[in-house]
Image (cartoon, rainbow, N blue to C red; front, side):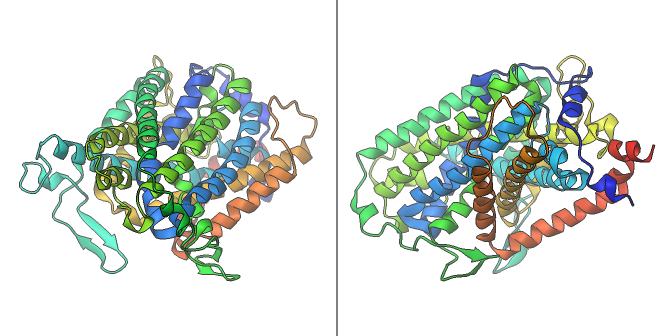
Length: 499
């Protein structure tokens, strides 16, 4: 086995020329479309569900600071993503960045991690979409999925998991709405990136309008005492080592809340996967990545402030926090508006997440690490990676409709933080090994800022429970087995090494 192959890097110039060799994707996205894609991917499950859970169980009103800390870590990662995306505007995101600096083995590891990140996130989001859709039907007095309805056995997964019971069977066959929305999104994505971006832009407009409605309609119901009486009921810590409190830390607190809400920020990574479809990537990608993150961070903080001001944190409904908060203050009609906004928000998240996954496959297939003929197949008319998009749709539909996703959801957070830490590390390495390269966008404050990003991401990773680490290790172990059975022997760099 050649160690030279395992740690050999691929030049950024080679990545760019490979994408321009006649099999590239259609460049159709400008800065507004890219920013909308980022907002579409970020605002969804996090703002309509996750904020309530984190506030009630982990941080209280200090969840506002949790979003600041998580947003800071993501902002630094976003600056590093923007530097790399402007250097190498090709599909693949953090996978390509690792390949250019850390070598093939680490590139495979991060690519495999991204597959988990996008697949689990998409399945989780589709599952959440189904619940909100069923809630909307109930508000419209349509009882198809209610007990006794003719589709009642097609409203959830056939089994579930809780720490107390373990795995147990339910009375359902599979989650039909989750399958339907996944197939619709898959068809849109196969048809073309322009159509996908247009659909996303409409949904982003709807959900941002609803988020602004929540903020401005909720302000008049805010009771400042809900903040001041017990702003940080669980403390400001939450510093743990694999879930075990250290240095006086706790498994709850503001920092633990920050680790818990990192899932909400996953979407800006998806903007970088669209690099090969940006019209002017050196200019537009930094705008899309940083712009979407800043906009969404401000909205998250504002919604967290309004929610914890409207309702004491102990009374927040973790399943439907925003809609329930308006109901508690006597504005029940807002529940329908929030539900419509949640459906639009979650749909756009699903669209962008499922758009990113096939482009990771495409980048890995171009390097020989996955079967080339299938995963790099570009539709001759629509210029989309259609085969891997269909495969992604089938995987996400199966996961969303059949699996107890609560056991996997936290994997998205730890996988996301792992990717962010590696991108920050890659920027540091490339600044040393290739200092003279023209950088259309530079992460400011290097090396201090990227190093701070690594430290923040690692600290948040260590604040997640140990079982998340075990699941990540198992997943990476499966990935390494596939790499050494297939990828290592078909790698284009490996073939160049032995020739």
